[in-house]
Length: 163
Image 1: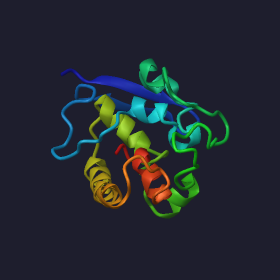
Image 2: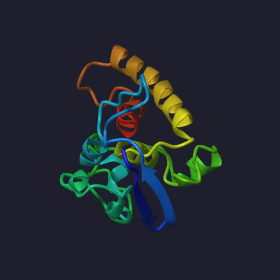
Image 3: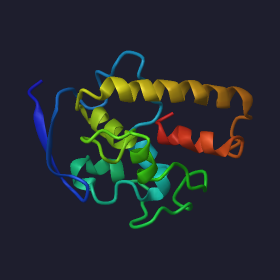
């Protein structure tokens, strides 16, 4: 595959470039099998709908066809579970979870990975997903199916990690 270059110009990155080195939604790392695509996560209103409002040009338009978006501030009504899930970007920065190439965090990394970018940070991000997948398995084991209020932060966080 001949790499296709993407140039990013949004509020958090100017002139950042990356290559799409794999076909979209293919050639994932062995054992990395998220249950939701970025489009499905956006349709569920991840991060209260305010996550991807200024960087839509970077991603395929069809990802946003059913997206629940809230420009400006997170809106619990956008979230499938009706909650505001996750931590602030400042908290992610403070914990050292962000890579400079993905200043919005895990979901930005996942969107780019899903599109076909391969990056030096992939192993760390996939390891974070695997750790959360183990936790989500416990939620599924101990909670009644369809009960979004059983351990709500874990259940809503599972959507944020593509589970």
